[in-house]
Image (cartoon, rainbow, N blue to C red; front, top):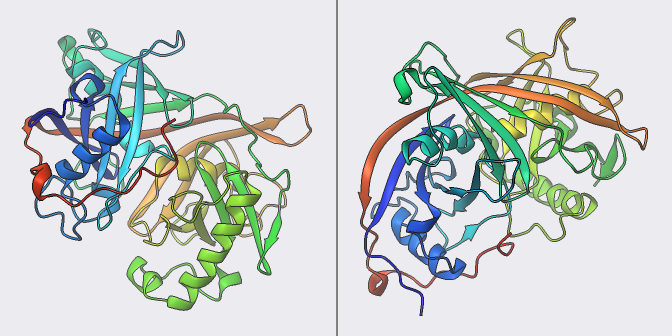
Length: 370
């Protein structure tokens, strides 16, 4: 019988523009069902306010990182990302999260999984959800993580120490459908995966401008219906199967830039409109915009020199470095992707989950345990 702890060591961190609970894998039940039941009670789900747990009543603040030493010689730690639904008893492992990833390296040092360097530390991370790799580098003066600094990212007040995350080229195709463009329900799309399965759509093709507020877009029921149909079809075309109960692929509406960036974005996750944009989603957008003939290529203003590209979003921008090559199949492939994020330790202590006797019965985890 799986032992379920009544109290759990937990580090609450902001990673990029998200917030999540970070755990050592050894502090949680090994059996996925028992683990997910515990996490629902930790986060306070299902409840649209998550008033009885750590969650913040939004998908961006209802996230979990489970970290452990890695057996992969290419990595120092394994990072399993879990999205805890707010108003449903569901826990999903079917996607990565690049924002929460920003806190994994500092967490690994805080918990003694990786020794800190005297000035800077690089942590090699295997993202268990997909098997992809990343390396996070951050300041550790005197052998301690320093969260203070002058790096600023849109969507987060103030400044903090930079966390530079570099991604090697993914093992899968950049264009999962094999096409630069597909047409779904009469709408041209580009399906791209540079760390996050993403569907690029020109906002104008859905009769919106792409400059609306997230709230206005969420309240457009006609738009919501069209996006749902596009996402379901795109999921099958991208080899993801039935995506009706998952949060991938993401859908990103594109418009011409207004503030000196490459393009303006509005991203759905999958029905809520992101107040900014996820790191891996931005990586896929940046790569997609560089593909000749892709949806968005004609409206994008790409940098004349260098790999750095600015992706505009509802609360500002995200700078990402992206370059492409050509794969053995002759199709575009990702060559390099890097981004600067920040993270901050909010509290380190013990979380006391809601009693199992008073909690709703959780649904079966979505997507299996990979």
